[in-house]
Amino acid sequence: MNTLRRQYNYIDGGWADARTDSTYTVVNPATAEPVTVIPQTPPDEVDRAVRAAAAAWRSWRFTNPFYRAEILHEIGNRIAAAVDTIATEITVEMGKPLDEARGEVRKVAKAFHYYAEETTRTFGTVVPNEENGFISLVQREPVGVVAAITPWNYPVELIGWKLAAALGAGCTIVLKPSEYSPSSAVELFRCLDEVGLPAGVANLVLGAASTGQALVSHPLINKIAFTGSAETGAAITKSSQGVVPLSMELGGSCPLIVTAHADLDAAVAGTVRRSFRNAGQICIAINRAYVHEDLYEEFLERLGERTAALVVNDGLKQPDADMGPVANREILERCTRHVADALARGARLVTGGGPREDLAPGYFFAPTVLADTTQEMLVMHEETFGPVLGVAPYRDLADAIAAANSTPAGLAAYVYSNDLAETFRLARELDFGNVGVNNVDAGIMNAPYGGRKGSGYGYEHGREGLEGYLHLKHLRIRHGSTAE
Figure 1 (tube, rainbow, N blue to C red):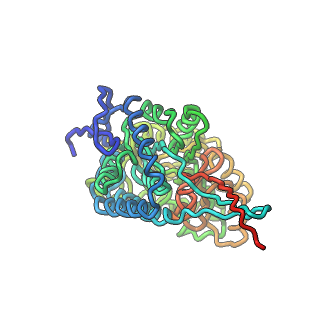
Figure 2: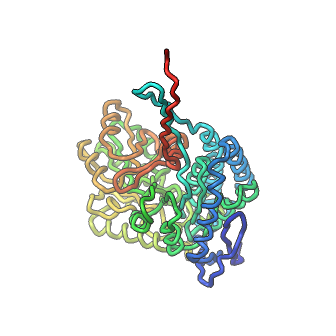
Figure 3: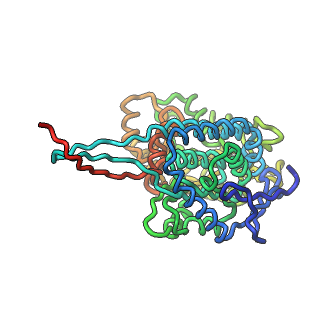
């Protein structure tokens, strides 16, 4: 893995260089050493990929859904057989520990199997007509060519959600993965190639912002699916040509409320998991916690102890480490800035607080808990997207709800309470697309996952994830047959 590799695009059923001198070098965040070179795919090669997808769609859209389901099952099996290969690429380029990366790959395989089953359940409806001799059929049809752009934090799982649903719906796709972690996407596409997916149905173009811009602005794109920052999401909205449906998951500053009736052990364990898993680099990570004053100090004491005990290391050297490095220097600097801002404004440092100098030059930041935080502190209203958690006490539940709802984000929120009335009040008043009560796993594959407010629109997972790649056709037939 110490040799600098060059990765290639996958277009129209084959691997090809982008024929450009412009490249991007990928760095291993655990060592700060370059590991991979990818092309900055130029507009003419993006055009070739989109046109290949458009040509393939003419036949793929009419393929029998049971055939598409069979293909998706085969892809899921190939991914499951390649877990270690794909997971190693995730760890090398993104940094999460190898065992955690393996879990991500296994979930991708499950996503393909899930959407294989949903593919054969693309049902229409029959609508009665007021006038005799007519019948109305409502059919669901694939939207067309999809442009998908995915981030680096879950570099194959977030591809899988889009890819499996789009192919199952009968769409074709051109995907641009993050330039920070492209090689796991390349290995995923090897699985597609090995099962004999028809040429042009799925295409991979590598590169950074300019490649993504060329993709989303292409006139033959019929839908855009994006996961990433709000700033990039806004830019994509402006760049799309004509009236193109968009689905966007733009992250969020996710809150946790621990009430006076919470199981404290469960709340602490859940907070540690959802704040520091993947080094806090997850859209549904807990960024800020509001804890009832009766439990506040004990919560902090237990949380500090468990957080300080987390094992941080290079995920290749220690596959079962609790946390690896953050993915890039920008996040390392943002974590440092958010901690400094909170301390300057009067927060109390419970544990952590800065980069792990003993693991330098890698981008390692100690998992950090800040107490006595207030809403004006950056950590409490900006998404850190790193292993930093702010904790504040509250007395009145209404104040905690108002603070939780006070940011533009609306992706996920978490509650720990064993009081039934309290639980239902929080579930009703928290303005988020996903609310986890007494657990911190806000998304499951067979239920819709999506945000509101500044966290985007549209859904992945569940039947709704497939329907995002379908549109409706009303077929009104005059058949002339009437009852005598």
